[in-house]
Length: 67
Image (tube, rainbow, N blue to C red; front, side):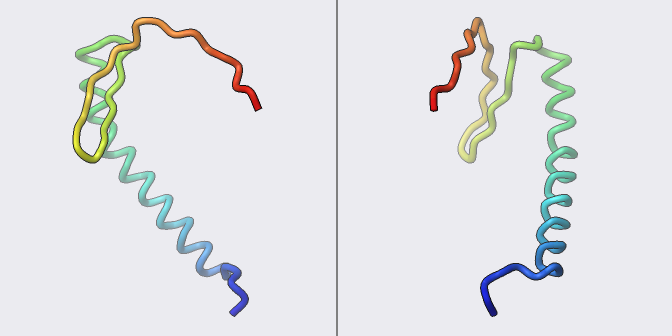
């Protein structure tokens, strides 16, 4: 074995990722609906492994990213 991924392994990984993204979208939809019905477009929900937060952006200024 030379360490490269076979077509079968690559396809399995792609299918797993596709299923994860579909599940993620299914889980996010009700929360997004709730957020839209209860808050305004400048509000976000941040979910971490030990907490969830509702955060409001008051103002923001974009900056150019330096290399």
